[in-house]
Image (cartoon, rainbow, N blue to C red):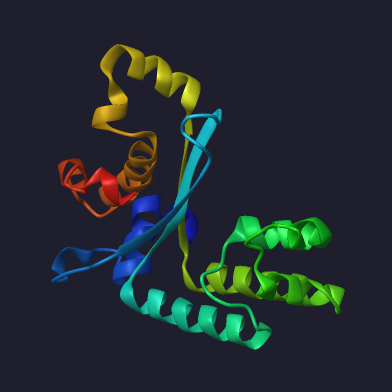
Length: 187
């Protein structure tokens, strides 16, 4: 039966618990975004994240904290630093601000860091069911920006974040104009 659903029907069912949510009073969602890339130097800027309801975020937060506590890893989690510590711990240890908790999980039992990483990935994938992302090709962006001074109106990270939200918002019948009210300096 799921094969007959459109993407928007699936989202409505997942988040509002109804294939026809028009009779519902409200559905509130929150998105968490993170960015990678440098808008000045890199070829691409990537913004990705998750869209979830309140209970999904609470469950993920609880699981996230429990997993970090179980493995002795402090919050916040920074993927780039964690990977640097796991790929080359000796080199990472020489960094001025290296995280001792990342080094501790890598040293000793070699499977501990992998198990930790698997557990946080499973927590994300099992609780938050709507991943969203956007890649901005900075060559195209800079070409348009040279004509329209786009960087002052819509910085690359804001463009990516708004682009992530647009397909999700239309699935719920939200007009795209409401997305424009999101201040770009939050991203």
